Image (cartoon, one colour):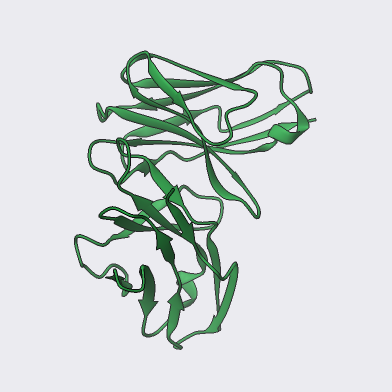
Length: 111
Length: 109
């Protein structure tokens, strides 16, 4: 497995609370991605980064923000969590060209 | 716009039977295609990429540009092949990939 970790691995939170998920890589890859995985929808891209402080929206970015202040860390923030954001979140990294390599995932439950 | 279609959400076969997981894509440029596998509650792992033309765990996939397909095949399925399989298409900005919705393969004893 590529050197990519996610924290926390599991989280239960309440509606309306802020949540931050962390993705950390040791591969010095330029690109980092956040996906959510839901039954019937497969993987959907939330946000991605193509360099430090360079980020862009994916297909399901509403309600999420990201930051990348260092090459190795990519943070995903849910400003005010909702039950519809209950999901499994995967981080991925890649150089150019692909493929992407995935982290172990974070299972988030919003009550 | 690029798109990946995996027409079967569920696929069930018996051990020792051949298996084919279908993937069709829509893309006007030169595609880069991948298969990923996800075992139960684990991370996605790269299984195959079309440019390498290699066989991993007995699986192969051939890019057919005329039919815009990249089907995954294995002649004799094993129980440990039971997993979710995703087809992914690259080729646009940076290293972004477009994923299909996945096919859940179950290999029965």
